[in-house]
Length: 368
Ligand SMILES: *Cc1c(COP(=O)(O)O)cnc(C)c1O
Image (tube, rainbow, N blue to C red; front, side, top):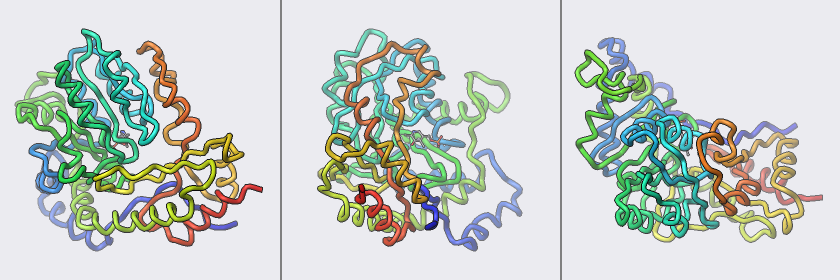
């Protein structure tokens, strides 16, 4: 049996580089609580992503919970069901009601044309997701938000380093959440951040992360413990130095897949977004069963038989999760329902070899 290929594989800096980075931690004994590495990473990220403020967290999900905690409980948030569990759970755990809006069929992000009918007097925010690093139609979304006096909180977990021309994804909307999980384009093993514009929120987010304490003595808000450790921040500092190489290696994988799979009957690839600088985070394909002759599930099983593990991502829709059903009205999202049945993310990581990409494509294209 040929070697196992997983859907993803974490990027690692050279071992010695990490050891060098963590040495000072042995001397200082400052292991967590916004130490030197944390502060350095925060500053470097603000600089790289060109955003005025960033607050670091133990993971992206905690960052998202912090973001949604600024709204009064019982308010409604218009969001997409075609996302990872985290987006919907963060809204619901903050005591808010997710109102599911459909996606558009090209890049799988929130469909701006379908937002306005869902706005009620209880709506406080729109929470779109830059799915696979595809940017949402942010101009239209933010125009609607402005007109109705709503905040925009992006789940930008997939969009690290993505730009629309000169505009960094981190600068869009009011708040953007980034995940630095081990499987993301840039990681700190576990970690995450909020990028935002309002400097009035800096103290609030720092307190939320630290048991809701502004003064270190008593909890003034119902915060949590969501601090990024110095070891995680050190991993981030190392990985940042190699980010450009890593994205370039991903680009090679992306281009090879495109060469082999573009235009194949029954297979729909994501197009390029005009003017957008991508990060090649994922390689989603849609298997249209009527045209391809096999369903997505059959294709996924065939790959698995050959020791290749693609991922049904995102499937199912978060609006179908048992944990969520009791918290929302069911909304009609026909495009999302179709896409979730057809989507498959192929293995994508920086050191995936061209030979392995070819092996994956050979299995995909051989249907007998
Ligand atoms: C990874 C991810 C998250 C959660 O981030 P963690 O750092 O794993 O908590 C949220 N939303 C999306 C879309 C993600 O892919």
